[in-house]
Length: 148
Image (cartoon, rainbow, N blue to C red; front, side, top):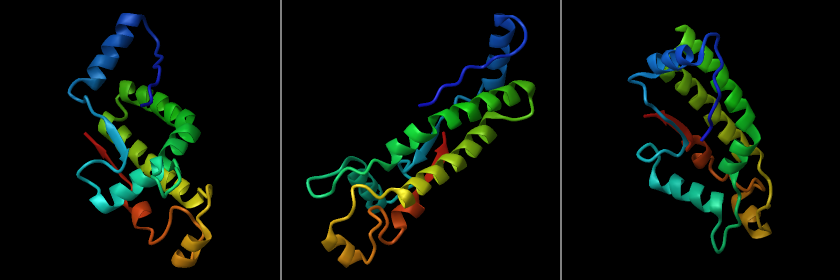
């Protein structure tokens, strides 16, 4: 989860009132990756097995890597968005959906670029590829987001 501090001119009560007014009725969350109900079980299982590893599959934490690498970018995005929401030039659903698109692309990019630990030689022969997380690209294409 990413939190951002919001700064605005005025006293603390005015800032708090602005934030409350801007967020009233918009208690929403962004879920990115493989949200329940938006991903088929085959791709969800592949994502879990690769993210955390199994007895036969080494851990390849593509989602945790994405958050670790991009956390400061997401915070910066939310700081800017908070100012826009308070100014009335954007809304929480718009901001969260834009962030969802960004996170989706970042996760997909990490799936494409992750190359360690490498596939076993037998897996490379079977797949015809050395990319550990891409076989048919179905899991990569299944990455999505939702705002609830």
